[in-house]
Length: 595
Image (cartoon, rainbow, N blue to C red; front, top):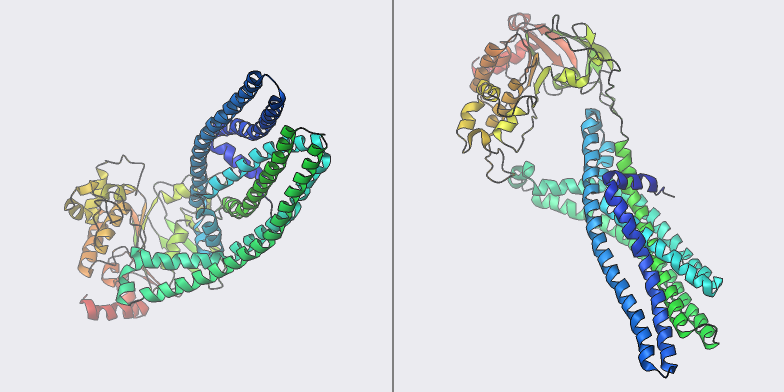
């Protein structure tokens, strides 16, 4: 069995809009009572007509019928008004609920650590929680409204049937039991299938995104991969469709028997009510009322069961939604954080730092020892996968070391509030973000504590070489970058990198980290950027990561990594005289770039 999570769902609706929820409840109550009142009015009208047929004064007889019909019309019109009002309230509440769910999802997405993004299980939970956030809350709310409304009507109808004979009310409830069993069994089966098929669903989404988005567009055409990915998508969708159809066919066959039983029960009730009418125990109006009550009771019960089954299935969303919201950050906030020293006095020290990613047996870093002193430019050199970027992630406390410690002025980084620490570090990674917003915003995001039109944005842009690029755009700094939105202007990879560099330069930080952000520039352009960068450093430390050693040689100290281990360190001159791995790499590049 699956817990329906009714209490959290009700809490979710209430938190989304308490006033709208109260109004909705009042309208629910009215909508639930109107069908019972209508059935009883029909009974009074039929009885009035039956009596009127036998009365000599037809005018008086019709007058009574007309009054009852007028009341019935009033109830019907009131019902239409209530339903229309309820639709507005439901739609408003649904919008509030979807927005509230997005708020929760976005807040948790910001809160969780980078570690979760290295875990495929997290992506399954994330996919199940986020992919359905748009429509599931509205679906759940409508199901609860339908269940509540039909339950109110059903209570009134059962009371009517009970007034004739307790057996009718008992039969109405008894006939629903097989339907309950079938629907719950199907819901369980659907729940298990959706959980099992989530990785496949994500895989098909991935195939579809590759075919339709711009990230892979060039290679798909150059290597003629379109039909291959399309065939893989088609095959997986065929598998998912077949499995889902099997479940639906099984439900339909089992549901057929329960529907036949309900149909026979309805005509059995009709025969019993007809028998009581023929014997004069109830009037013609009561015959109509009780038959309609039994028929409508079956409809209401069926709607309750359908919506319970849907709610039962929607629990998949709820369980994953709350599972996602219950994720806890792995980066622990200190209970009494120490202020980050400003300015640094002794610098940053990596002391025997080791690290391996969660759920991986591969050691990424092995007892690394290095120092970054205030105002010093340090370079990290090594092949791809040697651990350079991982060192930066540890420095920014996106992860914590699995061994050793990192200190700033002798204080372990874990003693600082993470965001306070990160404000002292400007980082541009190789896979920097491209914001499809204005050029000004792309740079301003480096320090949003500044006013959006601060002149420091232009200064940072000039330092990175982006100012000249931006001034050539149609709206200069107000030009939208990228092609996702109207009037957007696409930049070359090198131009995007200059904008990203400006973002790093904007922040008034004590440490600037450039993780191969100029890889798309030619060697000369990269050298000029770093030369200017070195000249403009004002009592700031810097870490450079670059494969081009013509740039690296201007660093004060160079650390060479290989497969997660620190194998050499020193100045360019010292490392060249050592004749080790660095010297070999430098001489190899010298043959290509005439260093």
